[in-house]
Amino acid sequence: MKRVLLVEDEQIMAKNIAFFLEREGYQVDIAYDGKAALELFAARPYDLLLLDWTLPKMDGLAVCKSIRRESSVPIIMLTAKGETLDKIIGLEVGADDYLVKPFDLRELLARIHALMRRLETVSDESADNAWLQYEDLLLDREKLLLFCHGKKMALTANEYKLLEIMMKKPENVFSREFLYEQVWEGTPAYNDRTVDVTISRLRKKILELSGKKYFHAVRGIGYRLGGQP
Image (tube, rainbow, N blue to C red; front, side, top):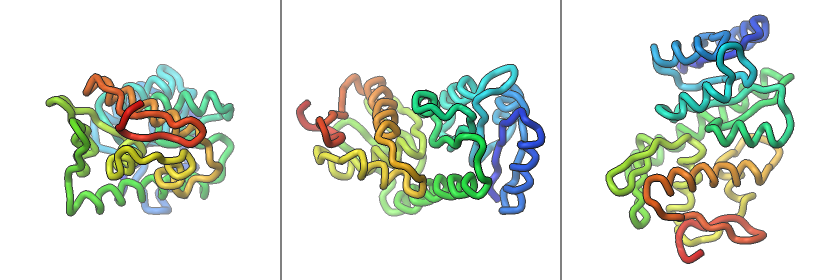
């Protein structure tokens, strides 16, 4: 049974979401503020976090940043902030997906299933070949870790999937539309900024590990891994 940590300060909403997910076979723990969320997360393993943006004691962005320092657990932000900039900020701090309030619980379930499928695909594909390498980059396909020069960095499910696609065919040019379809399948409304933000996060992580810029933007199309700028 998958264990979910739901972080939501509106108690009625939290209990409704928990009741719905428990009927769908998930085990749900609830935290009503950011500090309580970090305490629960430190105490037991979770398969998924549903994280509200606006929380007492510590907001959702700060919680997400804190968790991303130590874990690649999937995170879906639940937010009343529907502006594009707000969504981008959520992705930049490490969220895998976002859902704007008010939302249908069936849509939330669809987002959860899509994210879980991504992780299952990663697990299935890593069974036969646990490592993928391009130049100095070594991708651990079982643990979602990226290695370079003896250092390692944890990746989120979306970061891993995007990097895996591009490492399989280095120096190929991939359109934003293609990358979005492959990585964020099952989520509606294509948004090229989602791809841009995830590439930006990956670029920073790889630069920190290797000191080298591996990603190159191709004007009017998308991105390429490797090759000359």
